[in-house]
Each structure stands twice: as C-alpha cells, then as structure tokens.
Amino acid sequence: MRRRRESSVEIKTPGQLALMREAGLVVARMLRQVAAAVELGISTAELDAIAEREIRDAGAQSSFKGYHGYPATICTSINDQIVHGIPRDDATLAAGDVISIDAGAIVGGWHGDAAVTVTVGPVPDQVTALLQACERALWHGLATAVAGRRLSDISHAIETSARASGSYRLVQEYTGHGIGSQMHMHPPVPNYGKPGRGPLLAEGMALAIEPMLVLGRRQTRLLDDGWTVVTADGSLAAHFEHTVAITADGPWVLTAIDGGTSGFSQSGVGIEQVAGFAPDSEDGLRQPARESADAGHGPARESSDAGHEPAGTRLSG
Ligand code: MF3
Ligand code: CO
Image 1 (cartoon, rainbow, N blue to C red):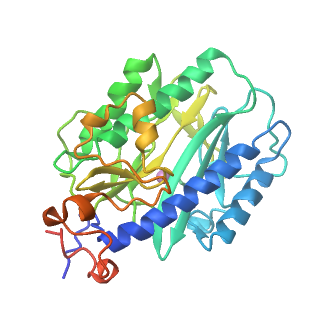
Image 2 (cartoon, helix red, strand yellow):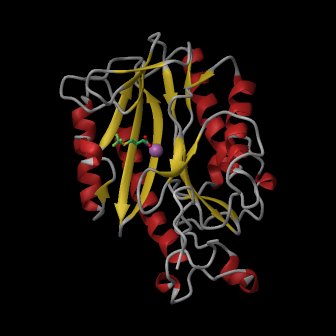
C-alpha cells in the first residue's frame, strides 16, 4: 500500500485527476458567474448567493462552507482585505473597489480551488498594474509546475515575476498548498524563495498556487471575525489562484476552462517553457494528448479503467 508519511505529497491517479478537473471546471464557471455579477451596489452576500446557486446546480459542494466553521460558499476580500473575507449583507461594492473572489468545489470527494481579483468600474493605472502583476506571477508559477523541478522553483518563479513587474510586495504569511482529497494539503507553496529546494515535483501531484501582492508593506493582520486577513498598513491587495496538476504533458490548469492555454500565452509565459504542453480541446475537457498521439509513453487518461486504479500506487515511493 501507499506510504503516507506526514510529509509526503498526495499522488493522484488519472481517474482522480479527472474528478479534480470536474471540480476545477465547476470553480471556473462559478468565478466567471460571480465576477460577471460584480457591480456598483451589489453586496458580497448577494455574490455568495450566486455562487451557492451555481455550485448546487452543478451538483457539487463548496470546499469552503463549514471548513473549520467558515460560514460561506466563497471568500470576498475587498481592497485592503487580502484573503478570506466573509460575504456580508452590509458589504456593498463601491466604484473603484478591488475585490478578490475565491471559490472551491468538491466533486466525488476531490477539490478544486481558484481565485480572481476584479475591479468595480475604472481604477487608477497603478491598481490595474498591481492586478496584472499578481496574475502574471501566478502564471509564471503555474508554468513551473513541471515534473522534475523542485517545489521552490515555483516559489522562485512567482517572486521573480512579481519583482520584474514593479515594486510590489509579496505576502509571506499565507501560501498556496497541496490539494486533492482535501483542500489544504501538504506541501505549503510559498510565493517567494530560492530555487532548487523542497520536494521533487512528480506527475500526479496537484497544487493550488496563489500569490498575494500588495502595494504597501507585506505585513498582515487578522480581523476580529477570525477569518479576514488585511494588510497591516491598509494598502491595497491583489490575489489570484489556480489549481494545477503536474502531468506528463506539462502543467494542466484544472481551474482554467481551457486548461491554461490562453493564460500562459497572455501572461507572456512561453509555451516552449512548458515541457510537452498540449493545448486543451475547445470544450475544456482535455484529456492530455498522450493517449491518442503517444500512448506508449504513459498511462492513458481515458482508458476505461482509469478510475479503478488504486490510489497512488503508480507513482508513490
Ligand atoms: N483559497 C483559499 C485558501 O486556500 C480558500 C480559503 S477557504 C476558507 O486559503 F474556507 F478557509 F475560507
Ligand atoms: Co487556496
């Protein structure tokens, strides 16, 4: 059987990754719906209700609701709130606000987790640039989720990208995380650090990568509600997140409708940097190209028994 050391990283079978992809697509559609509903005067409780309806209609469950008592389907973090803001009736959006929407879904016991930051109408160029820098840093991290690299190569790629974008600070007190049969799993994925350290990345691992960039100082403070994390100096924060699987075909962004294709190209992350990256099919339901073109080199993801393989036996150890 699979060894389950405290420090081991969960390895998913192709069948399990297929469920994570379903969860990821539910998250992607939820975020698209909620982001489209963002407008002047809407409350974050109303945004939460939209998310709740969407996730129920999809036949999925929220990863967040009930997690250590968390009371809502999504997190809505406005302006100096960095992450884990709780939706409220009396939190209504104003012109120029910046809001991070974070959502997680469970399908068949497997999780997907992603976040976007959007604005309420026009914002100063400096704010647009902060958001772009954060999203670009995320995609550089995702592009580094490649078998054979080390975990901290991802952290380093995020930090390097963020620093190249301008004089932003990266939040250090919160990190990304392993994800799969639970939302928060080993290993933590810091958004900064030296390359070449930490666990070796392997096919079948999945990570939630989530840089948080701020305009001021990087120190955080937890509000009295026990959840909402804000910048200690009140400066503006941005937060973007995706769940990515490490596959033989390169990073598979499970929470992006197209599996990551457009995100990598729009963020200037060359597809050639992504080992063997195979673009998704249009319906977003990629099964990596391997089984058609190259079946001899790895397990076929769509083989009829893909879901029946015992958990983790193929790649553990
Ligand atoms: N994406 C967030 C995170 O990984 C989700 C937090 S959910 C909550 O921290 F339930 F803890 F709020
Ligand atoms: Co997360």
